[in-house]
Each structure stands twice: as structure tokens, then as C-alpha cells.
Figure 1: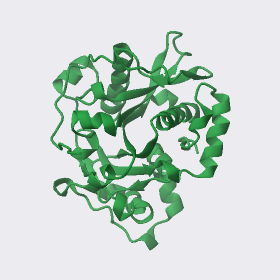
Figure 2: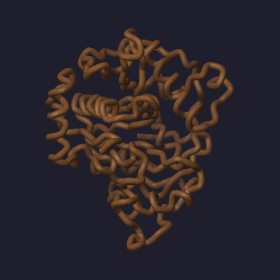
Figure 3: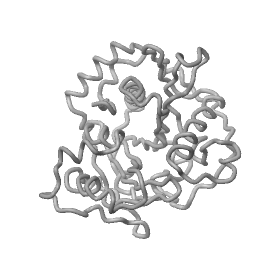
Figure 4: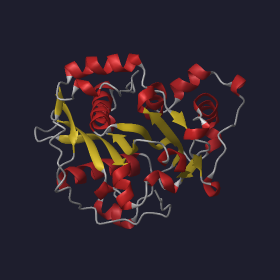
Length: 300
């Protein structure tokens, strides 16, 4: 598959998801929260609004003039991706989108010609692996809902998606805060020494953007403390059994330092499979059969 690594142009933020059959993914409820896929342009606009508030208002990313005017985060990938959403019905009975994941299957990326991750990393080895692949991105949660129930529903929804499309491999950019990698020396060195992907599955930051992650020797790292200090999403990936690629990338627009995370879905531990089955009984709308994937929440 040929991947264009050029920058993606922005599109009109109002997009249509008409024609996508999402009936296979029933809404799963747990208390005031639910998880489902976006099915209307209004759903996608709510996702883009949440992303703008988290990335630009809270994390000081730099919006384009068009994004700033609309107060929406959008790009050319939004129309071809599926958008997983967690909705809260406690604040407003009509529902408020409080969490999201953007996912892009390899079969869809072939039609588009590229993955978002390819702007920062050489992912050719990942695309050469057998089976369907899934790119994860634009994950964020409203600051009032960064807790166990919200994170679990996001991951339960992702598990259902992975099961339905028989995903063999997931990957994507995961962010650490800030654009000074040396301030992230412990986290980057820990990921490099303890979670580096095997050569056959190792993406590499593009030479023009490559930042060496090996700031410290492994014997100077308190691995337990380094794990605890990781951002919640990165920590969740690691506890899931994720690998990281070679090198990090500084993303000045989003005020982050990115690593490429790789997850083989068949590496999920029995512990998390049991955990998924328990959570599925609490949120019965998500099929128990998708127990091949779950990750711990930010509170774990």
C-alpha cells in the first residue's frame, strides 16, 4: 500500500456519515454514560467541538484560522474515519459527548491513500503485516470525566470495534505533554528500554523529525515510578502490552512529543480478557465475544 506522507489539507468541518451501517454496534449504557459510534453530522461536530476544547483551549495547541472561527478541530481524515463516542446523559438528558476515539481501518486508508501516523513515522513494516490494521487517534476526554467509568467505556467500545472487523494490529501516535523532549527524559528512556517494538514491527520516526528517546541508561531508571508517571493513555497502552517505535517526534502544533504505539491484539493478557468480561456484564450492550481487547483505565 502506497502512503502519501504529505500534510493533510483541512476540509469543511461539516461532514456526512450517511450510508455507513452502524447497526452492528448497539449503544451500550452504564449509568449515565453510553458508548456508540457517531452516526450523524451532528455527532461528528460534537466530537470536533470536544477535541477543540481539549487540544486547543486546555492543551494550548495552535488552531488554524478556520478551526478557531468554528471552534472545531477537523482535518481531511475525519470524513473517512469512524468516531467512537462516550455520551453523558446526566448533565443534559439530550446527551453530551464527553469522550472520543478516532479510528481508521487499513481498508479505508487504502482508498484515502494515507494514514495520519505516516506524517511522523515510517509505518511500512506495520502495513506489511498480515491481517487488518487499525489506526487510533484524536483520543480525548472532557476534564470532568477523566475517570474509570469513561475510560472503560471507551476501551470497551474499541474492543467491540476490533472484534467486529477482526483487527490484528493497532497503531497510532500517542502524546506526552510538551515540546522539550529532554524534560521527558525518564518517560522516553523507559519506553525505549522496556517497550521497544521488535524489529519486524518497529516503526521509525522520519529522519527529518527524529528525536532519540535513549536519554538515560536502563539501570538508572526506576521502571515502576516511570510507568506510574506516564500520561494515562500511554500508561493504558503499555499495560495492554503495547510496543513503541524507534524515535519520538515533536509536534509543535499540538504542543506534544509523540511516540508511535503498536498493539498486537493477540498479545492481550488473560487478566484483561477476564476484566473485559466482568465489565461487559455491567454494560451489556457491548458483546462479550469481544473480550480479546481491553485496557486499564487512568485510575488503575
